[in-house]
Image (cartoon, rainbow, N blue to C red; front, side):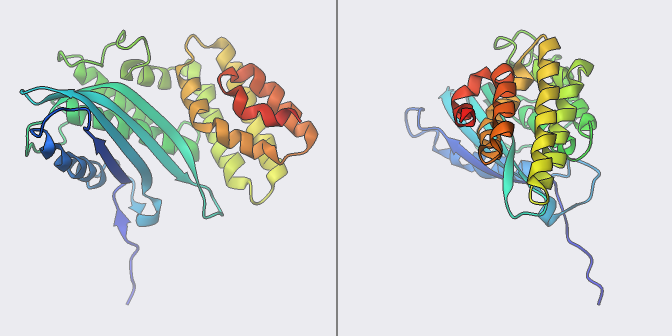
Length: 286
């Protein structure tokens, strides 16, 4: 009998929720929110693409709730850590790490999380926003600017949030490091070189590394050069900081075993492009 491949949703995410900072026992029910968010993310069909089980995007969603009140209003922070397989290997790379320090939402016990693209709600809306941003980054890593449709979906969430008084969605929220500016920059043509470099780094660099490490390193140097040139013209470092916060340690490892001349070339480039992680790159000076 012919066995068809098993199809699956796009995400395979684990959720970790910490509410230790809240006082009293009345918040113990928040433990249920881990599973509800996991089901919300993993069981929904986010795209029209047919994913196989092995293609599902792995991620870890770490939520830290820092305050709450009797109206079930909570605030805290969330980190999304996303993994991407490296072609022809059994290893994975941290494709992107996204932080949000200004998540406020309402969650009474037993609340049902519902996908609704026409009405905004801050708990599900924030999840919708970031899952589409993650999809955008994932598709960008496999095809040039392939993530645009998903960044546009994230933009739709931002637009819908503007019709409410929800906190954390305006252009000026949290000193430019916010959801509004994140997706605005991702869709800004000025930052397309960074997105193209993201593709080259993953598809032409990491995915080819086991086949030809020297050629892969050259592709990665070309990608970082493209990032350097784009950063010189940019008005914001937000997307560049996200990239290097995710990739600095990996980049140091990629060039750590290269020939001395390649090490020096990489370090010189990184010295100009990513001064925030020079301690990670110090070994490339030798």
